[in-house]
Length: 142
Figure 1 (spheres, rainbow, N blue to C red):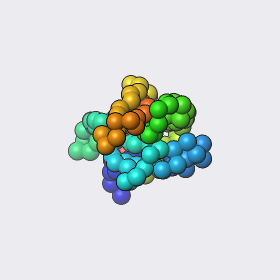
Figure 2 (cartoon, rainbow, N blue to C red; figure 1 turned 90 degrees about the vertical axis):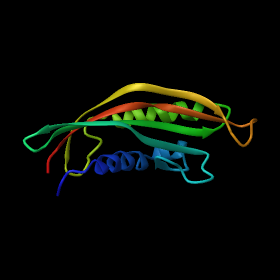
Figure 3 (cartoon, rainbow, N blue to C red; figure 1 turned 30 degrees about the horizontal axis):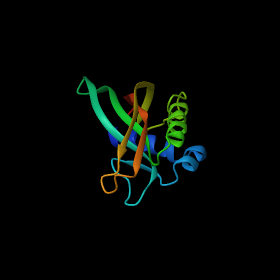
Figure 4 (cartoon, helix red, strand yellow; figure 1 turned 45 degrees about the vertical axis):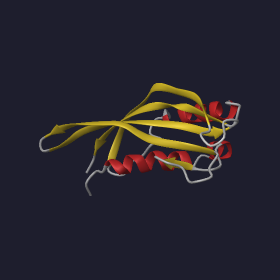
């Protein structure tokens, strides 16, 4: 089988979905790119950037930068802060991510994410966002 960057995405989603502490904080799920309609407490994973290095007509390594953030419709950032701490604990645990057909080289926290926005449909509501961007370095094994 050939290594496929989608497998890195899947490994991150699987890690986050399988954590009981995180699902208790963000019960509306872990989503890649966009959450389901009606979700008010969830985790959003997005790919920010990607690069790779060619070697002998193949890929020597890949670097994928992900933004992982908690999103909560609330005036308080308490649960978003707790979820962001949990992301860091999970993603920075050595070998916690196990993408199919890749060897994990390293994961590094890069940039903090923290902001509040008004709900576009109701100016009295607020959405809390918190997490970080993470660099995920992998080497294809297939």
